[in-house]
Length: 515
Picture (cartoon, rainbow, N blue to C red):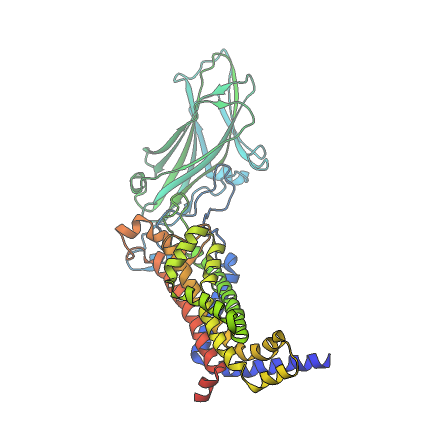
């Protein structure tokens, strides 16, 4: 026990001495500072950027489909602080309580109108589509002796007035609603149509946005939920929104009264929402891929740190480990074993690296684990030759001959006498191998051979390269998609190289003498 304490105390003292030397290297401290910053970003990625990096969606309950976070190719939100950019619009969720959870909000924010004396409405605190929460209940009751609507239909208008605070128009609209019909007199089907319009201020004109014909809605307990969006940018949005001011969102439900007899019908409305997507979003804007769910580029950058760390560290650790084992065996055993191992290493060294990587990844598949495996397979040869040359020198030293004379086994000599003299090189090689792995993965991704099911910096660059944006606009207009991942790759590579050079200055005896 006392011996272990002494060993532990000795290790602590050695580490303190090493750290005191390392602190004197400015570039080494810069490198470790950058690595620490990236490590914090990787560890706390779900907190820093809580969105899904590949398929981000807004929070909230929407039975049909949750809305995308923003429109495609939005510029960063801080663009609005630049001269002449203050007019840019942001995302705006129009309806505050789209699930009708609060009766107070319903009474103060919504206005319901209809064109029939047979229609009445009320707020219902239960019966909603989600956990039996609130909804709007509209009753349509007509006796057989009473006259049916002249047009054969009734219109129920939901009106929601809101303030639009931006000079620029939205890029697009997204809407969602749920409805259900109940008939107390008979079972059957009713044709239903929904219409979405906007009004500007006190103007009487309504601007049509979209309409949907359900054909016929089954009577019963089933909820019908749907969502949709506008796709032609700058047309209806620019016509409706001409600047700041009050606007009214209108949701019109049309029920066709084609029954000859009496009707006692209840209509339930829930999850009524419309979102106005602006032209700015997040710290780095959005991508245009995939079209239906554009990605937040800042989220991709943050979560890509994890993948880059994983690729770099796993590849470095296992390639250095393989190179260490092969070099030790080849250098100490020599003979045919040495020849066989080194000729195989030379064979891999003379093959062009990138073409071989492309062939292997194409054959094995684009999984991230296959890519890491291929990088490990291609990364051990140079280090094994360095270890072999050092082992050949060490095995001729007098202390190795003494160990052999005392009857020590080959494994014992390698583990207790040769390996400790090589370990300084292991630390240096670990640090300097990480950048190559990160850049290799980014290169494969840029060529379309990356794993599209993960979020990495290379995938960010690949996404940009395969869009029309890269061809038509280039990097100039959408630099925030390309420059940040490129800078991140360069910074992480530089950080590990700086740390490797500093370790080399401290652990390499020749460089120590020069200092």
